[in-house]
Image (tube, rainbow, N blue to C red; front, side, top):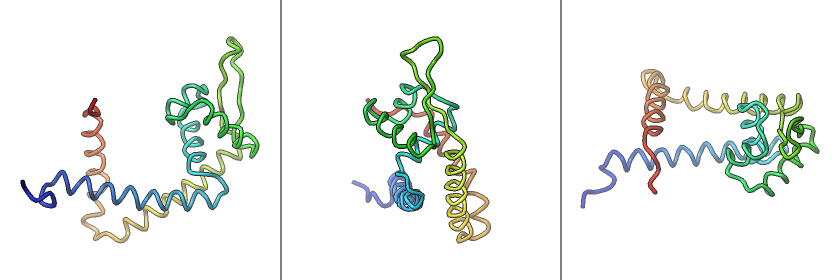
Length: 150
């Protein structure tokens, strides 16, 4: 068998995993400084990006159980970051929308995250810095064409 360290796919996987872990540690530490969990941050981002999703759509997007989602929405409602809105036509459906304080918090966290990435990019030699975004975009595009194994 070939040395796995010499296989490009193995090296890419290991490097991506290391980067994900390092950025993940930063994200969790940085988000917790704002008195919310990383799960709550993910929820705020998803609500903001989705534009007031239904509770069921939000649970699916975050791969959360309905009870776990309800508890997290409750906590964010108490902090006045989000609110539930009933569907006028169907009482069984509720939506979650981000409130101004939630939007402000999300913007603050995102600015800090961008500053972290800027520090990473600044540590790269200039010729490499210019290739990072196109290379990552190509990897993401390629990964989106592949389905997960059954």
